Length: 112
Image (cartoon, rainbow, N blue to C red; front, top):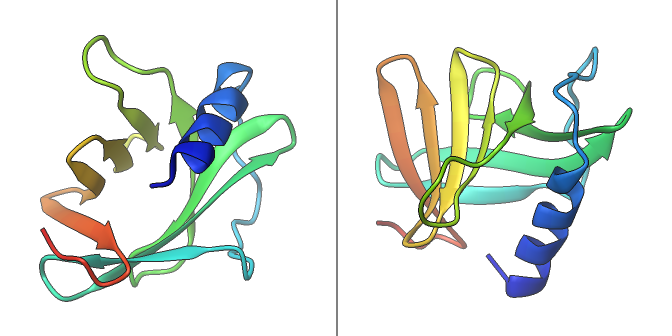
């Protein structure tokens, strides 16, 4: 993730609430991440209705995940609805968790 994009994400997250948009939709501004299992995770990060959200599609339709405050430790950005979680952290660009499914994904076809 580019430093400028990360800075924008952190700035948006600083004032974010935990509300979710009613109908999650991906726009053309989305990014596709290639995962170790050969599947894609598509994500878009946005501020909607005062909330910093990740709209994520891992093949089962888009899900709106509200931003969660970072835990202590290395920089990590997390969005979660309690069932599904998207995490960005140094070294692992994107990790998608949905129940027992865990995927590590990279940008532009890079695989971990």
